[in-house]
Image (tube, rainbow, N blue to C red; front, side, top):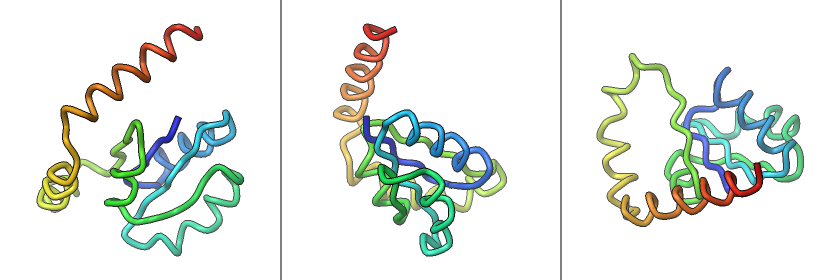
Length: 105
């Protein structure tokens, strides 16, 4: 599964490394993706870094992992990201991915 992570700090970074080591393709994102080199190296070959817009477009599933106090500053960015993608298509993909996951477990 392709997982985009918006906000690659303690929580997003840790989950992303675990998901990458479990075999998922992970795109870590940050406003400064060049600072994610060590994180990407820890995650392995199935991981890379990019901007938040790239993570939103990349993932079958997108984890938004930013501090709550920063959410209000990012509202305009999230609006542009989600307008660029159809939320309906995203919901269908998430449901399909969850169904696949449930059938494996």
